[in-house]
Length: 346
Image (cartoon, rainbow, N blue to C red; front, side):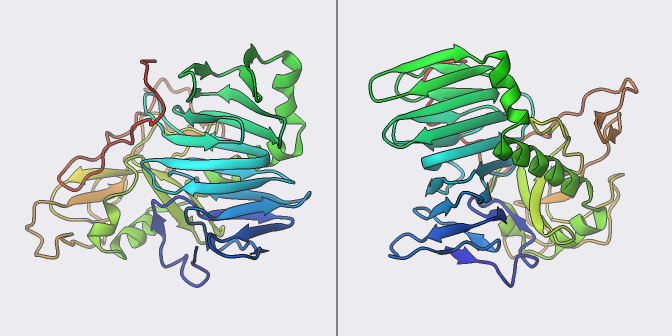
């Protein structure tokens, strides 16, 4: 595990999974290869094989791939089995976890979740809850989105519940009462509050903050991460929020991520204002040569959509719905992660 206690503000932009983004109540961490548990800190980053557990009053938010969050409830234990963005996997050993996967229409995710009873892949942006009773059963609730079950390759869409035990798998529609539970359960209420806070943190990212962040790091660090966007550290609020590549990203709870950046293929990295003009930025060749190299590109704040966002979403001015920028292209770009568990079209 790597702790950024003194340097999270220095490493403003990240595409890594495993960052601890919120801790309330009692929570502890067990590092892979260590024998003892220790107190979990808000400045911790998890590596593959590290475990987190919570007491009755504990709540923990863990960053997954940029735009997706894992929120662990009380009396729970979870392991980050694989922290690579291409094959991300989280193992819930006991308790409750909620996955909020922010996204845009048509984009594919690859978040693998395993429990003692099953393994599944989250492949669409949405809202998911997993409950594990050790030695008994696993309950999956898909409120929004889509999941692929690894054993049967069954596709489970939003509005359904799946129960897994040692001998049986059952799928059923959520009842009216089950749909209302998310407004009463403590961990569900907390998850919604966190989602709203993080979307607000995104809206409070200024052009100056974006310019400063992208000009303070070398070019190669911008490549090789998620094609969807980045984790952006908002020092004013003391947490990472999602900074997407292009407009069109919305939380399944309904809040828009209206501050975004676009990648322009070209020869340099620079900051720029929202109208596309060059700001007081930097021109750096990621290959280490002069600015005439051909493998770089330009990051700038995205131009505003035709319909301006408001607190409740985009206005009703008749503008087109904003669309996400295409994943960046070029010799150093990364492809969209493939779904490791899906074998049938959907």
